[in-house]
Amino acid sequence: MTISLASALSRKRLHAPFAALGIPPSVALAFIILALVIGWSLVPGLFSGHDPFVGVPADKLQAPSIAHWFGTDQLGRDLYARVVHGTASSVSSALIAVVIGLFVGGLIGLLAGFLGGWVDIIFARLVDVLLAIPSFLLAVIVVTALGFDTINAAIATGVSAVAVFARVMRSEVIKTRQATFVEASFLSGGSRWHILLRHVLPNASRSVLPLAVLRFGLSILVIAGLAFLGYGDPPPASDWGLLISIGKDYMKWPWLIYAPAIAIIATVLSLNRISRWLRKTD
Amino acid sequence: MRNAYLNYAGKRLLQAAVVVLLAYVFTFLVVSILPGDPITNVLHDPQNAFTMAQIQEIIEAQGLNDPVALQLWHALSGFVTGDLGLSMRSSRPVATLISEVLPSTLILASSALAVALVLAGLIAYGSQFLPRRFGQGFVRSLPSLFLSVPTFVIGLVLIHLFGFQLGLFMVIDPNSFWATVFASIALGIPISAQIAEVLVANLDNESAQEYAAVARARGLRQTPLFFRHFLKPSALPVVTVVALMVGEVLGGALITETVFGRTGIGNLVQRSVVTQDLPVLQAVVSLAAMVFVLVNLIADLVYPLLDPRVKILGATAVRSSASTSDTASPTVTV
Image (cartoon, rainbow over all chains, first blue to last red; front, side, top):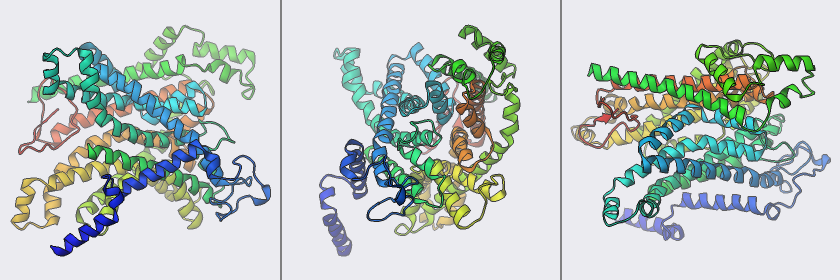
């Protein structure tokens, strides 16, 4: 009893700065990684002294070292600089995708759940259709129709996420609409509009927010996949997926694959951890 | 009961047919209405070196000058009767192109699914049997890790480690046994994560039930408890999850086949995207949707037969995703 208490105390002291905020250490680490990634995408110049586009041919394909943290690529460009400078388009395109999915899907789910009846039936079929098409294939045909660049890849990824958001939003709205406090609000004269904004949306956002964070990570993967297949911006852009796609032709110098891959994995893993934490704290 | 089931099956079948047709219309609209003009992109592409007469011929054959509604009608009636049209690039029937590469993808997909099931089973076993302090946390965090790694990275790492370093297989021979094994591992890992998540959650749920506490109190060990009591109710919902994973397998095949240089549906899609061969894309995407809908239909129809707790309650047709409820006698509405 005493021993367990003591160990609990020491553990508490160890994690005191996070425990005060109610944040487990792994989540704190996830937030730190995320902050770093945001820093990379906002001010890449601050994090790397090398130029991502101009290489020194004499220094090509060097292993990671103090001068070049992630090594150099086949043209002698610093790989760390390329990863850092590729962050902005890799991450912001995923953000665009999530925003599209969230708004379009959220609106569909909201209307379907709140209005019910025919609107619900029509939207439910639309969502069924969107879910039936494998989401990566859906993203591929949309990006094919729109043309190959990173923004279009983001839009395509967003379209492929619409159905999931619509589904969750709809079920949340229906759940809230039947709650007693909504009935009370309606009986005491609250208009539909008032109920929608004041009660239904805030309640639904509780489970939609963790989903959005989760889909953010997933969108990074999908967009990296599209970039890997060559459906994003062409080189010399340095999207993470594109970097790996270039690296696969230089397998004898594996850091060309592993460095951008670790950037992707660390980012997505952090987002997944945060999403799970958000779900639990609700 | 019998009657209710047939009613339910009929309704689901009709619904599935409608969804497949709508999916076809949807993909058609996406490829034909969105900006990006196949005629200028493909036919007038100097790389293809079509003569003007050839271009005219292709436009005639594909009916590209007809209004969109008429094109849709022709395409849709063709689809319903099993005619998938001609490839814009090679003028061969799309159905032939697909059936040529289908076996390779089927082999990859089925072995990937097998890998996923085995991995998920191992993770589920580890989550219940490894000591809490040593290993269990690691095993439980595996699904989250697997879901954070892009499929192509898994493939490339496997090629790097086993192909280049250990020399187990040659990348130039993508259809060899080992190359197929590693391709299916690459494709199976992300899928195993999603199956394992459901399986572990269900096992935890079962193990927290009162009957489990009673069985433990009466001296039943963990192993017979796991195999005799937990496994069946926890594994049944996996049927639904596996059916949902079919879409992931088809999407993942596109990337895995590119990474490993295999021929197959994914490779066909990749080539058709690069050459903007819209009829092929349209056909593959709608067939993928059809496969997805059919597999899920079968899963939904088989599920009530497998799980006697599931009862069909007339008109309220809700998909059974949550399998076990907390009540003493779980009844799931299908």
